[in-house]
Amino acid sequence: MTPEAVEDAARRLAGVVRRTPLQESVRLSEATGARVHLKREDLQDVRSYKVRGAYNLIAQLSADELARGVVCASAGNHGQGVAAACRELGVRGRVLLPRTTPRQKRERIAALGGSSVEVVVVGDVYDDAVTATREEAERTGAVVVPAFDDPRTVAGQGTVAVELVEQHREQTGRLPDVLVVPVGGGGLLAGTATWMAARHPGVRLVGVEPAGAASMAAALAAGRPVPLRDVETFVDGAAVRTAGHVTLPLVRDSGAELVAVPEGRVCTEMLRLYQVDGVIAEPAGALATAALGSPVALEPGQDVVCVLSGGNNDVSRYGEVLERSLVHEGLKHYFLVQFAQEPGALRRFLDEVLGPEDDITRFEYVKRNSRETGPALIGVEVARPEDLAPLERRMVETGLDVERLEPGSQVFQYLL
Image (cartoon, rainbow, N blue to C red):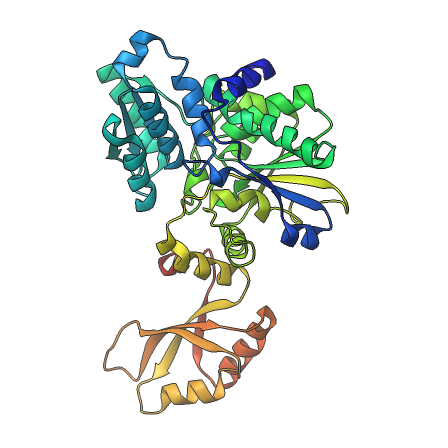
C-alpha cells in the first residue's frame, strides 16, 4: 500500500464519485477557537465515502473475477458503495448485513443495486456477516470486497484526503494543521495516513473511535488485531469487533493519533449538527466532530478539517439519540422508588421531591402486588446537571427507599 496507489485511485474515481464540498462550520469554529471545516462525504450519491473503496477495488478485477460476481459484508454504508459500483460496472453482487443495520440502509442498498444486487441479513454484528461472506466466497467462487481490509479498498478511501487537501488549499492557500477522521475497521484512517505521511507529514492526523467499539486501539495495544469481547453497536458504521490485518500496520506506522469518544457524546453532536447546522449525520458521521475540544485539543487559529463520513441515518432513531444525549449530558436520570401502596403517595412525591424545573418523563410500576410498598421506575429530566444532587437529597429527606440506576449498569441497558 503506497501513496501512489491512493493517487492512482483518485484518477480512477474522477468523474465516478462526487467531489464533495469542504464547508466551514461556524458553530465548531466559535466553540473551539480554531477554523473548522467539514469534508461533507455525507453528500456522496450513496451518502458516505465508502463508495470510493468499493469502486476502486471492483474496477480493478479481471474479466474472470467479474464474471464470478462479488460478495461483501457491510454495516450498511460499504454495502451501498458496493451496490452502486455493481450497478455502474454491470457486476452481480450480494451484500450481507448484520441484523443491527438500520432498515433505511437496507432499503438504500437494494435501491442502489437494483437487479444487480441481492441483500441478505445474517448475524448480530458486523463480524458475523464477515464470517458468512468468507463462507459464501468459498462455496460460490465470488470475489470478496472487504469494507476496509484490502489495499485497494484502503487506497480508495484515502482519496478523501487527496481531495480535501486540494480544496483546503484552493479556499485558504494553506494546508490544514489538523485532520480528524472516524475509525471503524481503519480503512479511511489507513488510506489517509499513508498518503498524508508521505505527502504532507507536518499535518496532525487524528482517528476517532466509538468508546464502545475501539477495536483499533485494542489492536495497537496487543500488537495484532484482537476481537473485542463486547461491542456497543449504536455507532453501527464503526462498530467493528476486530480491526483489519491490512489497516493495523498502516495506522501503527503512520504516527496517527487515536482517541475514543462515548456514544452519548456522539448523540449530542448529532443533535447539534441537525439543529444548528442543518446536517443529518449518522452516528459514525458525527464521530470526528464529537471529539473536538476534548479529547482532541486544538490551538486558537488552527486550520482543522473533520471528515463527516456519512449521512445514512434512520429518522426513527432520533428518539434514542435524544435519550442517549440527555443521559450523557447529565440531564436524564432513572430511579427505582418504593412507594407506599396508599392513596396520595404519588402526589406527595410530586409535591415534595420534584423541583420546579424537574420533569417526569417515564413512570411505570415494575410489579404490582398486595404488599405495603411497590417499586416504580421513574425517569426524571432536570434542567441542569447540578440539579441532580438536590433532587436526590429531597428523596432522602422524604424517607423514600430510592435506588438510582447508574448509566452503564446492566439494568440501565434495558432502558436504551
